[in-house]
Length: 47
Length: 241
Image (cartoon, rainbow over all chains, first blue to last red; front, side, top):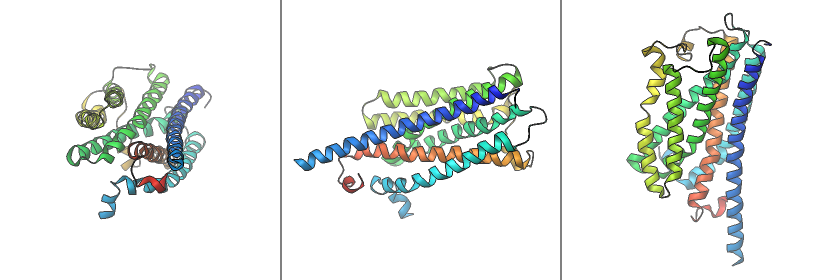
């Protein structure tokens, strides 16, 4: 494993980093919209 | 059939995706855990490539998913073009970023694998070049979507691009058979014959499954986000939100 350790580490690290970034971006976008909608609902109810 | 058709409506689709999400997430995490542990520690080293072959557990699943997701975008684009089902367009557009990510992973892991095995990071080989074209197709698709404000027009043009771009998928798949390439022959097609030891095969299948469920889980989140965006004013969502 030592001979190709760096290649393997970069390969797995990069793959999972990209997937995690994708997941975080999608979740942040989702919860931001949910938050906005809840705010809209509260303001509509208060009217 | 009726229940399936109902899923085309955001009213039924939104809660259904909510049920699918935890199941897919759990399957994804378990399969990826087994795949990574099995691929890195349990599988024996390859007799020719040694430990460098362990990059197969990232490269092959990512490449497989990049083709699979583009095919899903193509089918959804065909459905949208024929029946104008908005959800099909939403699924296609929500898939593009994940597909592009898998294509980048396939290209980068291929380069990292190529350097110690072929002695070069990149070569203008038929398989590598056609996979790079796939990345450009994904980027073009996302760019076209974000460049056009009118949703109907954007859906129509993106569907045309996805349908035309589908020609690249069989080229990628058969490139290693049609032309003399540095890239090895099809890996997954060979799985039909026991050409690979079970200790190497099972983690590979687990990684493909894990990457697949990751895509489905992310698709659930992204489609739900798009539905919320598009139909927030719709009366159906009074309870769901």
